[in-house]
Length: 192
Image (tube, rainbow, N blue to C red; front, top):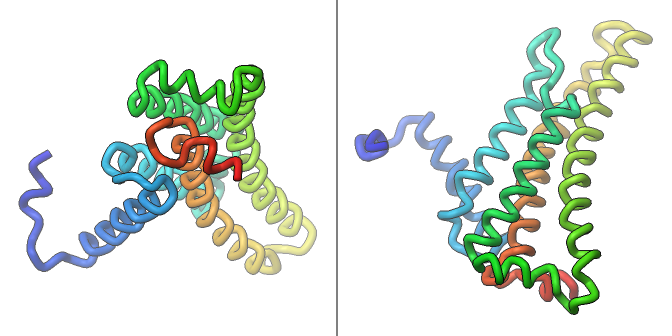
């Protein structure tokens, strides 16, 4: 862990690129969740990098992106579901987290519980659908039109695959903020 202390004062291109990514993720966490990014930085950044790298695995000939498989997306959605619980309890305690289910009233407990499950399911379906649509579209066009015709579609698919990690990470931040009673973004702010 002490490797970061030996970084040069004049950063290399790699160090500068990594610092830009870290600063960008930190500023996005602050803007989206309205909190200091420290406790959330590692989880959000890991989600972002993992989804980006796995989406772009399609650049390797013959490799289907892992995010084009149901299992990978279900695991990512499960991680976000568990992170919502973890950060909710960590910020507000068990009682504070459970109180979020009773907002705006006790009658909402079953619906809010169902919402917490469907939120994660929507993450799963959204990521899977967007990645698979690009894979299928390029496959169909390649089989019908030949090798060079789908190149513009492949470029569009790469752009989509670059945007998906951002969307996934932002939605994870919003879900965590909604279920953390002391983050200032608690459900009342999302209901208006």
